[in-house]
Length: 229
Image 1 (tube, rainbow, N blue to C red):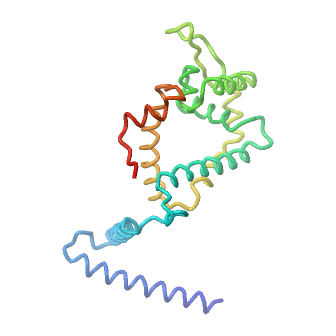
Image 2: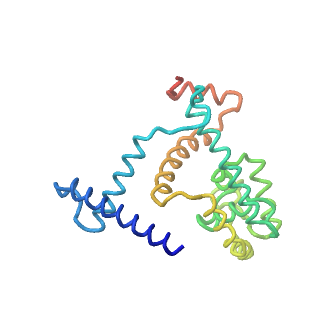
Image 3: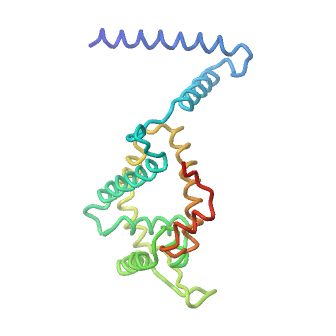
């Protein structure tokens, strides 16, 4: 075992020396600083180039399966994985669904808001959102009051009891969110956030228009230019 570790250390050291020689050779124009930060930036940029030039592969590609099909399927799968971890995070607690603690997290993070805003923020249809809010009210985790601007609107805020319920589960909730991120590097996480934010902004604008379900696909296809190849 000791010999194996020594051999691994030797091989790693040899690889690093070769990388340093390559770095020194390519950096004659001093594009990168001649220190550890410059070396790390050079390695990162070269890794990005390799990744950019390596074609993505997926099941069914050779049979004509489209990238859009793969993206849609993977997003559905990831949502199901995340729900599985969320269920574990609230097991043996007073929470009935993951939506309940997500609603509480939103209220704690963004403060008091109307029922409509809270439901929309969680991308729920109104009946589902109202049921969730009613459960939270019954648990005394949130409270509602009339809006001073619109008497027909109710404002929802988290209560001390709701904060306590949330705090009790937060350790498990944080574990669940870390697991969802899986084995992505920090750079990959940041890149994924950018891409998911772009998608979210696109779909959130459509969702906010409340287009009739029957006409949704035709309406969006008529307004946006999609690649149909």
